[in-house]
Length: 306
Image 1 (cartoon, rainbow, N blue to C red):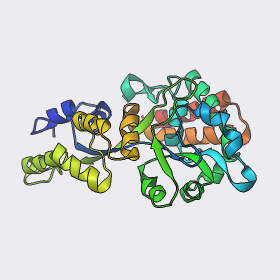
Image 2 (image 1 turned 180 degrees about the vertical axis):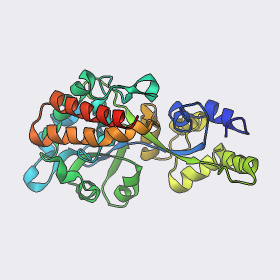
Image 3 (image 1 turned 120 degrees about the vertical axis):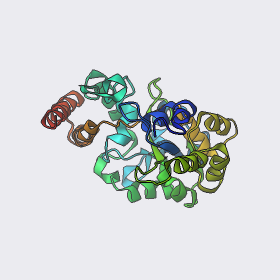
């Protein structure tokens, strides 16, 4: 798409994480960001009428909510699903996936001291939730617990919104609360409109994609599908006058997101980091030992694929 009709618009008009997600490591733009997703906090207003500004507030009220014998918990999330859901905690003290704005696979920043500190902080929330992370690895189980009113708060993405909305739970939604004074940063994901290199009408196709990410069409998508088009102007407009709590939460959390790294080496992080969290949560392995092991596995896989 570079040097054609709207590469400059993608670079200038969209929020930074959307631009990053639409740009190759060589700087070439390859698509128009059409909507963004990220994780937010869904909560039961009957249990938490005022929501949460910090996870410490939930810790203080844990005794009111958590009763494992009845499958009742203050908080659940996909602890053992993959690194995606644990990233907010593991990076809260400055850990990162790769150096140079996620462009340098030789600089792995998610297994060092900052990540250890973040994982240890995450472990301090264990009393609020399940003792075995496998118990909530199934999305239907954890979402069902929340929908049944057995969970005060759950960290989930937009894929769960309609389920919760139709469940009858008194639903509240917010950006992730702070934890230990730190703002929690999530991954952002984006749907893109791309133009096939085999198109006979590439400019027309790009003009159409340009229209599909215009403010006019963004209004329509928000109204009909709760999809948020990530242009700077539209995000600011929606933030000032959100259509509902969910949209407000998404716009607020979008200010604290990073695009998932494009690097092929990102594929080598998921398994070792998921295993590290499982070992720490379920087997009482020290966070440092688990992340050292994960780092060795990641480095080995990267070296083998050079």
